Image 1 (tube, rainbow, N blue to C red):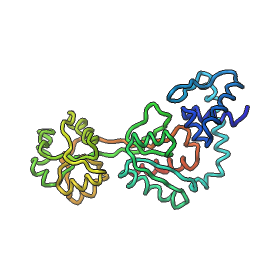
Image 2: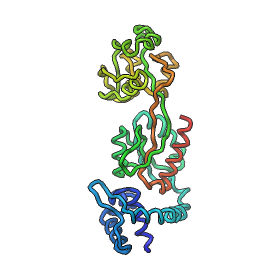
Image 3: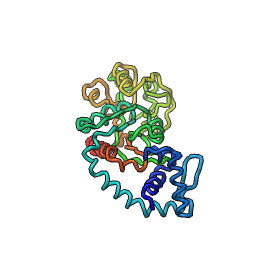
Image 4: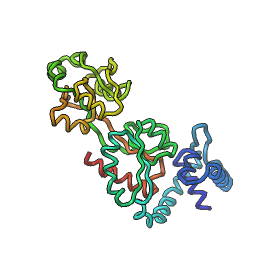
Length: 298
């Protein structure tokens, strides 16, 4: 049996698409289609069900994948062991939200860059990052949701605590955290809300988790980024829900203050997401592992 045909089969099986499998292998889509047809002809049975949104393995395809995957992966590891020291010389394309990616992930990768890694970073919200990852435009994505229905693998990276903050003078106007605790969100009706998007995702999450009620207000200020929101809160524009790590310095300096200190603060989980099968590539695997180790301290 031709190992190249089995390698192509396994890439398509893991990617869930001839197109994405071709991208993983650096081949054209017609070449991958032809190889799969050749393999199916030699085995005398179909290996995939073709659909509008990709392919799914037949029973024969699943059985073949179970049999060949461990051996092909072992051969790949042996063949690429010599590339381990050279993996830093490859380019990794990383996508994720601007503040988290720029403040945490990119600095954490500085040692790999020093060793020769070429890093290309694109800032994007979770859905755009997942679309980019699925299309092969990036290698790793930092997301705030686990992907569903796509040939992607997500590993929990870290949790961030969400804090409802405002300028000290607004805290005095509402009567302090005790008043917010006693009256709930009604105590905050007069405080303008700030967010990065009209849907107010972080404040919506906070209201549901802490107040057990849906958010029923719109934002007074929509700013292009969490840091811009923090600056506006510091200037006295109103209140916002922000990650604690982002506003920790402002809290310590007394520039902003928490409106509430719930016993169970809401959390947002970040995932490190890759296309299925790409962790067999040393430069992606090394970057992936490095970020997971760095996140232990976040």
